[in-house]
Length: 258
Length: 330
Image (cartoon, rainbow over all chains, first blue to last red; front, side):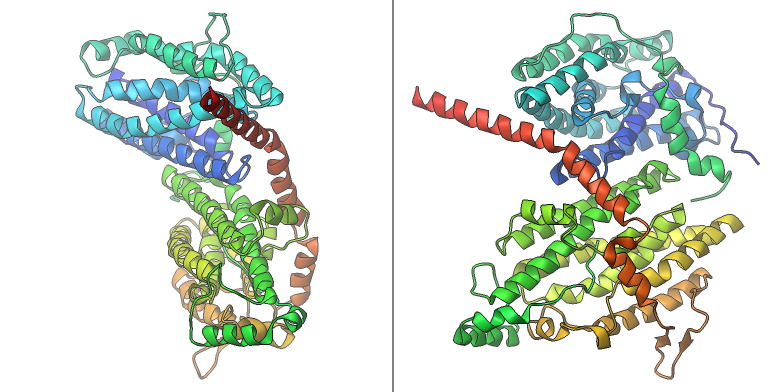
């Protein structure tokens, strides 16, 4: 039997949970790639910590998506048996680690959003999402603090670290707009009080990000062009490679239990 | 993850120590008192412990690599989270142990530099590759199992900071060992391919794991001083035997065959194993194991590529300090 891709009934709520679950899994996976290779042992610990938080969020969101969908799917089927076009994560989180500055900037942009997003989601009319939000908010607040401190150190550290941090900001900036986009599938959930409207969070996100970037003596690009597509499965070239690694055992030994 | 019996003490250094103090020191050890960082201690005791603890720390850090090799390919989200947490624990052990070694007067930087320069040893078990997922189970089951055998006695080591570090480390290691065994149980109850994968991993790891306990007692040159100082409480062969006796029934439970056709149980109930190929051990120690070069290269790469980050952190801290001083002066 081949390890066929699963079929997902993407009702708005299933899709909503999968999108956030995919964000968390893919970003957590990226952080786990650092394990054993970080610039300092303390940072190896911190990157693994954040990765573990995100993996935990992904599992909860997948479990909820499976429950809402009510089919035969589960967290592992969502993670291991969907192909690249079925993944619904933001383009930002699938971007390669690059150097430490790029990893930190990626994490900072995301955490500054996640911190606001999960805090708002604690008021969700959906009790499961509200509970996931309550836990994720605490984690995101730490991720934001940790990455903000690094952005300031790197920006205001040496010439080299400044240059690397600025390059990372310039390269990743175009992936930030997608965090605030809303499509038809989510609009109904927002109206029902199940989802929060991310567009509302954007000014506060920008304020947080600008504050840290200024303190770091760095600057934000003036370009307003934003890349999108992750939410509907149009990804960058990077995600396919990540998935071929992540899914290799499940694809090589179809149907086995691990 | 674990230390191995590579450690030797330097008898010559002792000659210069003040005899009365040395006698007093030995009397404290004999009464099972703990030696603390500010206490007087023979230079050779300090040197032996610095080497042993730092080798142990290096082993934890290098030991992150073979298992880290499978984090991105772990076959389920539960396994992925458990493995990432486990490798993170090892990093924590490394940090903890470097801190214990620093209490003896050598900085972490110096210790790490010696490792990166290839001058300091780490456990040779990590110079073997992790080829399949079953290797992750086997490492937990056997490598962590052997580490626990080695480390439980170290919880009573005469040097306080090391003994206390070991108590915490052992708790986590025993969790890792159970996790590894559980991976093996799952594989052995799985498909024929999974079972074969488990057997193959055992075949490859069994002998290197037995070597983790160090050379046979008859060839070991320096056991005496470490024993007298209560750093080492059991001989290499004693610990190896204990490990084999504990492991054989576990392999039987799994339905796996230990790759030693000559192995038999004697009248005392101990499992007698065939002679170990110490030439292989020597070769791996000499740098000729399958992964020696890869492991060191990976550690050096992380260190070199992280240099600008550490420099940035230092530069920022300096700037901040001088800004605060300037502010205070206003």
